[in-house]
Length: 133
Image (tube, rainbow, N blue to C red):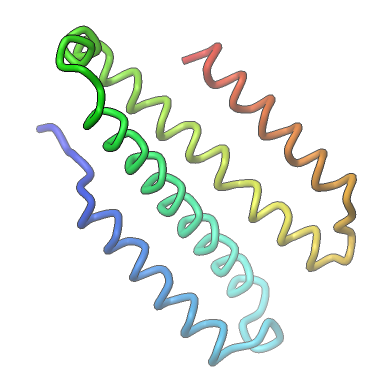
């Protein structure tokens, strides 16, 4: 059975995670949550960033295929699985950047060179994804 992610599913995931993060940020603190609570917050932030970036990439894809000529769409029909797999991998790689920057900021270690290093790491990861997949 094939599963297809829909816009309703992506937006539902975004809304549920945003509501959960709103609750956690307003009613708990790192001292009361403990290490497991902080880990869950970082996981929820990663899941939120992943769903948001995936939705943005799918929106750009929808606009692109809407204005693309019919002949070109017919030629690209053979590669939708490859395109979808790359979309998921690139979304997962890009979603790690805000989490990494937030963790560096929480340690008080975030500087301009760290931002450039994260950009470089993300560029290398995306390059690797496009070469490998």
